[in-house]
Image (cartoon, rainbow, N blue to C red; front, side, top):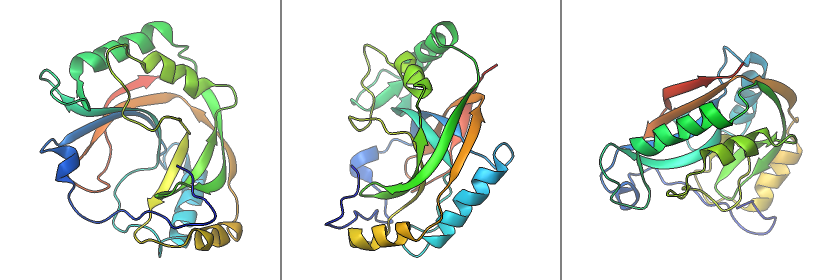
Length: 212
């Protein structure tokens, strides 16, 4: 949910969330990795923005910059038990659909505009040519519901809020912040996971689809 001008942000507490993970450890997703080796100018600008809001954001995050494509759920090699479990069989089906039905050509995305959800600060990713939409359609499975908000908004998260700050304070800071306006070429899609029992733990790639 986008941040509204009148209200407060929702903080993320530095604690374990057993009511969510229920003892499970591996949370899977498809994503585009935004790393310094491939996108040095963009990562420099993201670092600068993150640093300028560091007094408001959760500290000690290890999560790499990325664009989420599809949130799968808790990865399991067993038969799914909960509605947010995701089997390896589902992953293989998604991989087959990408390999056989998706246009595997590299494409460009425009990165611009600082914005905020109620719980996180982020940079907009413009998908004007519906490239990400097409990929997400190929990742859709008839027997599995994506674990996500109802409306997909591609973005790069800069950080989660660590306290309940007034919304207007965030908007005032955003208005004084230099904008990003860059285009990047996307030539890899990753399937990977993070450790659910470690807050903002790093992403680990399990599979990479190379685009031509």
